[in-house]
Image (tube, rainbow, N blue to C red; front, side, top):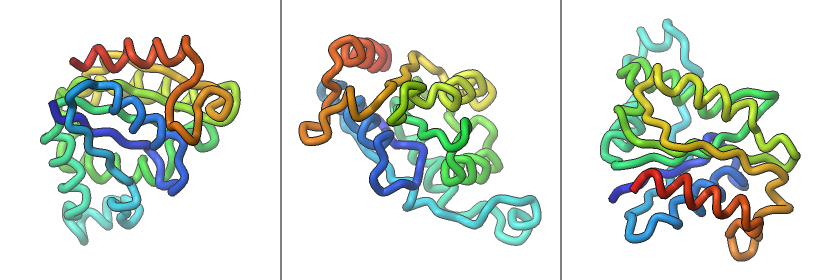
Length: 174
């Protein structure tokens, strides 16, 4: 099973990237590929740029990565209650290739933040809009207070209830 994981952010110290990688590691025997959105940086989308540039190679590569995966795990960072600009821009460019961005792949959608809200606002938006972009969301989970619930050295969830919920969520992909 090929599982694509990424934090929906361009932060180089992303807690969402760490959560996505950890979630991927819970799928026994899976080939897990972790993407870094910094590898897909493009000009800010606009219809005029699309007319001038066509479909950028990086958006095409991202779309192909999704197509090559058997399952996807995304952990959403939240900026002011919404998607990060880096993720939104990549998503906008990719949706111009095909509105079915997620290509009917089974997915687990996650989110975390340092605070008690656990980036639940952006996670809710992502889960609610997912069907419009051909995502089969099997489960979703918000992890509040990341630094209280995740061991940064061992890179594992240390909250037993959250870890159980995450294991159950990723189990839906198998």
